[in-house]
Image (cartoon, each protein chain N blue to C red):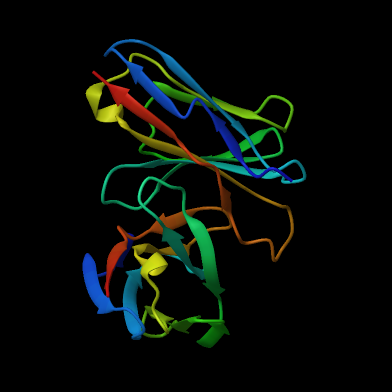
Length: 115
Length: 109
């Protein structure tokens, strides 16, 4: 078990460009979450997958954001036409299926800087 | 609306005890988490309370009162490595967590 991994760890892009991040959850975990965190704040929920189905999506998420988990394993988060306000740490977390499987295991995050 | 409040920053002395409070007002409640986050790193799980009372795990304990919308994290025998942010999060739906802004804990020798 290598834990949750994210790639890249850092991304610098110019405003208006598209970026895509990848998350590989712990292999037996069915649930996958994306969060965004800015300095001095707690994580902000973006979206949730159960296997390949996207079951919840934050109302704060604009149409520029899209996430996929095509085979129920890894997931990608794409941001189109990036804005400076998108600069943040993007965290991925996973958890196993089950009524009492409440703990979310976080990856190291992808830090996005939009210039 | 959803609201979670924690103190922004606390300072404590190595070897001492510190209590970090969290109050919440959410549309639903399915449990409360405490996570630790060192600067530049991802959050790591500390505790989960779904019923009222105290849960003890080594040097860390967490308390919940659902009727008061209140929780605290108690850290004993503080060590320098405990310097971190401590995040309170409420599970208000099956899957969504609402997070507080975190309490930055500074440990002094």
